[in-house]
Structures are given as C-alpha cells and as structure tokens.
Length: 148
Ligand SMILES: CC(C)(COP(=O)(O)OP(=O)(O)OC[C@H]1O[C@@H](n2cnc3c(N)ncnc32)[C@H](O)[C@@H]1OP(=O)(O)O)[C@@H](O)C(=O)NCCC(=O)NCCS
Image (cartoon, rainbow, N blue to C red; front, side, top):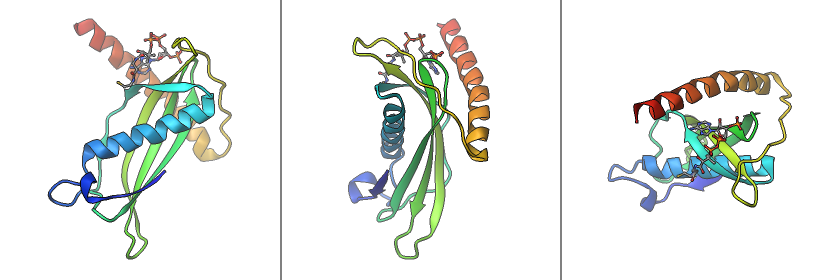
C-alpha cells in the first residue's frame, strides 16, 4: 500500500502522526489477511510498535504486508513500513509491526483458514519465528486476563 503524507496526517513538526501510521498498518495488514483467507479478518492483537524514524510531510509511505503463518482460525501478518523521499528516491525503514487477525464466517464466528506454504528462505524464517511470537502473545494474554 502506498500513501502520500499530507498536512492533515502530521503534527506541528511536520512528522506523520503515530496514530495515522497505526491506522495504515492495520488496513494494510487486514487486506493481506482478507486476501489470504477470503473472509472478513478482524484484528485480535497488535504486538509492540516501535517508531524507528520520523516520516516527514511530502514523503511517501510504503507498507508491505505478508501473511507469515496461519495457525487455526488466526494468522500472523507482518507489516514493514518504509518512508521514501521523493527528491532523491531514498528509502528508509521506518517501522515494523506484527498483527494477529482472526477470520470470521458470515455469522461472526472464528473459522478455519487455509495454511500458507512458505517458499524462499525469508518466508521460511518468518514462518518459524511467527510460532515463537504467537506463544509469547498468548502467554501475555493469559497473564492479562489473570490480573482482572
Ligand atoms: C478476535 C476475536 C474474534 C477472538 O474471539 P474469541 O472468542 O476470543 O475466539 P478464540 O478464543 O476461539 O480465539 C480465536 C483465535 O484467535 C486467537 N486470539 C484471540 N485473541 C488473541 C490475541 N489477543 N492475540 C493473539 N491471538 C489471539 C486465538 O489464539 C485463536 O487462534 P487459533 O484458532 O488460530 O488457535 C474476538 O475477541 C473479537 O471479536 N475481538 C474484537 C475484534 C475487533 O473488533 N477488532 C478491531 C479492533 S477494536
């Protein structure tokens, strides 16, 4: 997904607002998840987000989303964000995020998703690491519920 950073997307320093970027990340990831599952995919969780580099007014935001692994009714989607300076074409890695989406059937009930088959080495690494991240996030979820 590609977007131009306009004045309404920025703070008074001319940097893109974090909330606006989070919105784009969620949309890009939801599209990847829905295209893979052919279902409505809702956001179940977003892992820790780090803003590595400010994205400036007039730059282009490029979001690359991929389904890293399907579990059962949920899947992990990774989004890598780049900022492109249109004067020199330079690309800067600005942000990375991992989100979990759950596919819902027509009655809003979680339903099974077709697995993915990783191809190259990068896809295989993402597939492997996605399982470790899932274990951490489910553990975290369990602790959160325990506290309530
Ligand atoms: C996401 C949602 C559908 C899960 O429903 P649920 O009744 O908790 O369903 P389950 O406990 O059976 O979990 C379904 C799957 O989601 C996964 N899941 C649920 N919560 C999760 C979380 N916080 N992080 C990661 N995975 C999660 C489960 O592990 C399970 O995955 P699996 O089938 O691949 O093993 C439900 O909580 C919901 O509708 N949440 C609101 C979603 C929404 O509105 N999002 C927009 C942002 S506000």
